[in-house]
Image 1: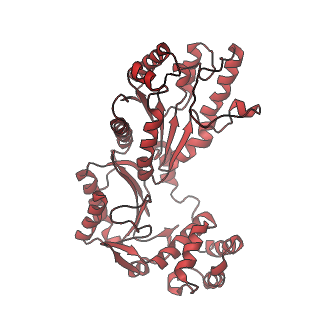
Image 2: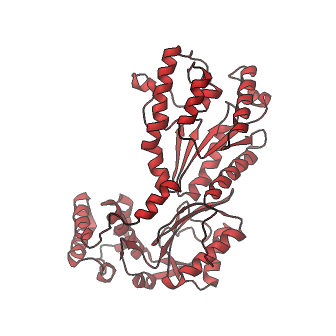
Image 3: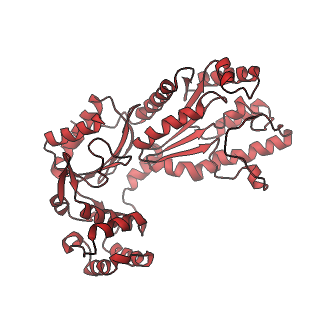
Length: 431
């Protein structure tokens, strides 16, 4: 990707002292689906922020999510064709207020990789292991395997662990070839005495995120045959790049609570397309009200238990294939037979998605794609969806009568436009 290659060319032209910490095998053309972790020398912190600001503006990119952190801010950057998450480690790599490995040692152990300054694999494996251990109390197998592979049964240089007590160093070297959960637990307790993170560390930033969420919810609405599933499948990979694999998918609702069918012991058929969405008769008035009330719990309590905790503090995207509004547009599909005024009350109670994409085109085209429903019903649903879209301030109409490439691009443009608006006040360069 030319965009990424140019970023590293500019870093080198500006003589910014930096090193990419890991996952650089595909650089400078690509990150290989990973985020980009860059350690920048303290003297060049201002320069790299100025460079990023210029880079975003000149390449028509947008900031779609930001997590402000004085030690390592995270930036999700995207347009409708490309996305990346950059984590900028300012000055050093810290846990709490203490360096894991002194930055002078990290910068000393770097090399040139296809025009990009990168951390040597051995030091990178050690650093990744230490970060994972202190953050999570144990490491995934991939971190341990990479650490063992890079060390080749050698001991770790004491210089690299100079921030840790000698007993930590000795114990790690003693057990490094056969690290298990028990060994990691001992290492964690040996290290946590010296690497203490205050309970209130970053408290201000974390509280601020609840009012300035770095994450999003995106609902896709559309009748069967509107191209909804196809567009979702085209949009997800790019959002995964911009948000570093933090894109989650849910059908219809948060799904914190099981469906009623599962609740009463019935088997759910969740695989494959639904060939007759109106096959089941709606429940009666009382049954419909109980069904609606139960799912309202999922849209409210379930949302705040499952969706909001991540959305509020992490750069992520929750994609909903359909949402509560289907009860208004196609209540028969959900087997709900209630007055519209009750369903509209629910619309004002539920947490609404940040972005609502209404996908559709003329009824004839949709019916030709999927003739499961009568033409008149398709025509009615398209009209209802258009009416909903025109009256809802968070809704955007996406015409899927065009090619799938154009429909997907239009959807991404709409998503990125809304995301970027939330962070348009963020200034990378204060000059």
